[in-house]
Amino acid sequence: MTTTSERARAQAPPAVETLRTVRERGPDRVPRWLVKTASPVVLVALWQVLSSTGLLPRDVLASPATVLTTAADMWAEGTVQSAVGVSLLRVVAGIAIGLVTAVVLATLSGLFRRGEDVIDAPVQMLRTVPVIGLIPLLIIWFGIGEEPKIVLIALAVTFPLYMNLFGGIRNVDATLVEAARTLGLGWFGQVRHVILPSAMPQFLVGLRYSLGTAWLALVFGETINATSGIGYEMNTAREFFQTDVIVVCLALYALLGLLGDGIVRLLERGFLSWRPAFSGR
Amino acid sequence: MATGVQRAVNPVSVRGLSRRFGDRTVLSDLDLDIEPGQFVALLGASGCGKSTLLRILADLDHDVTGEVTVARRRAVGFQAPRLLPWRKVWRNVVMGLPGRPDRARAEAALEEVGLSHRSDVWPKVLSGGEAQRAALARALVREPDLLLLDEPFSALDALTRITARGLVDELWQRHGCAVLLVTHDVEEALVLADRVLVMDGGRIAHDAPVDLDRPREVTDPDFQHLRAELLGRLGVH
Image 1: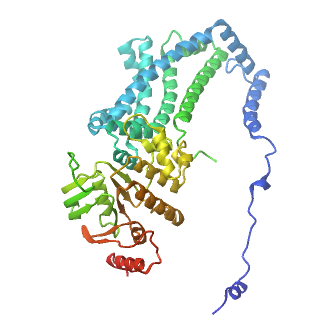
Image 2: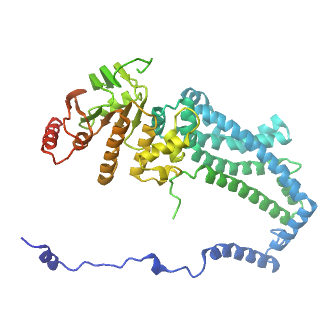
């Protein structure tokens, strides 16, 4: 029989280390926001330097300063406002149609097995067709007015939304549905209080994704045939090598995309505050 | 099952109940009666069909043969709290009650389980014990004639379990509803129940009253004697 202390003495002392604690790390010398803003600022400055020294010709890419003046001019003329207005209307109309279609189809096929049998297979088949590839057909069917652009956006929005909402509905925790039944909730109550709220997070993921594809569809629709809108301005600028106007138009697309993303983020904050999900370190 | 209102005397009355899963018979020709206000603990080895029986009584499983009559006003407490994470705690409590969500009623029920200060939070911030208490409030706010509990304490830590057990005892005395508690904990069954059932081979193999004075002491020789006997029936020696 050996005692604990005898056994301990027989062994070599264990290697130890002092673990780092939060306090020792101290505050970062350079604030994080500064580092984050500095890198894009440096890139723009570099771009300006290249343009000013003539290394980057105006025909290839206008300088940031020129882009800013052009933007101011376009704003003063009202070009920006009217182009954005037209493009925004197309996107909003397309998203509205796509949203309603996707919600109706996904709810029917998500909630009812018969609905799935009828709806899901054709939707999955159509989903594999690249939406952009439909442009020639859409032009034949709807001409070159607003309709083909709106339909293109609606189609681009429908599929990702459908997939996510359908998946969300089918991922509902069955034990919660069961609990709801024991509480006396009928079918409608189960859908309203359990199934739809539970599918909400994934629906919002789909919404965010489909907003992205909506802008993509808009860009395609507008650059191929249009007589107004951001894409039209960009196409006209191309013919005259106005790289400054093109950059302004790209910035407008980016800003609008950012706006859409911001709206979905707000929706997420409002609808998903109940979530116990991991929110990052 | 449970169709049509009958003037049955007992909150639970089961005759010749059988349930098969494929080739496996889980319940075979089972009979059971529970009297109003009676606290019944249902013991049995894992997989013996105790939870299946409870699910049938809760109207969650219809694929059975036999005759099942249960109280219309019944409530279920599950192993997990099963609160809806997207509804505030008080809304969870009154979920499914007729009419507009009645906050005062929810808070009265939460008060009973010592959770009135938690009524306006999301379920995610509740601890395991608190969530289980909220689920208990949700069951009792329905003023059930029959409360079905499926191992409600098994996911709690040992200390919380003792508190929760005491709470169930207290609430049962106050509400006077019949309780069917499915558990694998012999001690828990003997502390709480008027009557202990042991399931085996798809039937109630043993049915005995617990004639011990309340509150019950684990150290009481009679308690220990009963405990040893039940463990023997469960195949633990």
